[in-house]
Image (cartoon, rainbow, N blue to C red; front, top):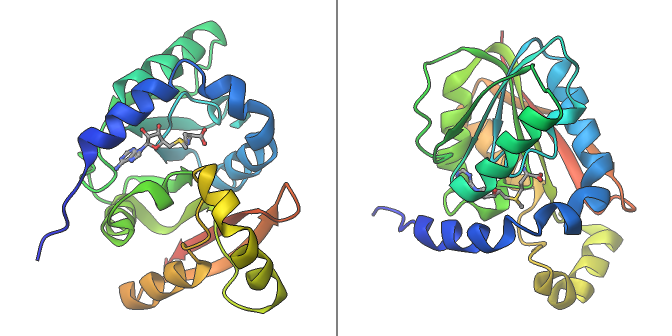
Length: 213
Ligand SMILES: C[S@@+](CC[C@H](N)C(=O)[O-])C[C@H]1O[C@@H](n2cnc3c(N)ncnc32)[C@H](O)[C@@H]1O
């Protein structure tokens, strides 16, 4: 059975978000964005950012790396291109329209794949992760940052209680870190090596998944 993609729906949603996205999210996501860029850059110079959006993460990479940013929404990408030009982000080598589940990129060319605030929006996250694994060099890492629910315990109970409110903000707790662990176990050569809760109060998580060298 094939997964039905509502890619057009996503594109329409982000066409509306593009003009206001930065004003709403720049401060709220800054800490997570900075830590995502730092974790990705620590893996090596060649970085793919999936779901680059308006490019809010791009300014946080050091100038020594080479970043390719891809996203489904040309309206979000237009904002990213504006930033690359205005802020002279010469480490950004390409900004391209692409679906996370069909990356038109060669095998094993990136040291890191950064995935900030995207994985929970993709209808088939495992298919997207398979693609990221394919383009990753041996020893490289996928760095997934998102609102991810705790698997169990007190935090999971609190998240359950505030779930309806959080869902109104577009952040579901349904996507758990254990889903990434299950995918990594199945892939065989991938392992979750770090889960870093981040601002605010661990609400967002940064998960590093390493490919065997
Ligand atoms: C919440 S925004 C995050 C943007 C940016 N990463 C950030 O952290 O500010 C989600 C982005 O994911 C993109 N997106 C959603 N589904 C996608 C897919 N299947 N492939 C590529 N990008 C996708 C949207 O177009 C949007 O730009």
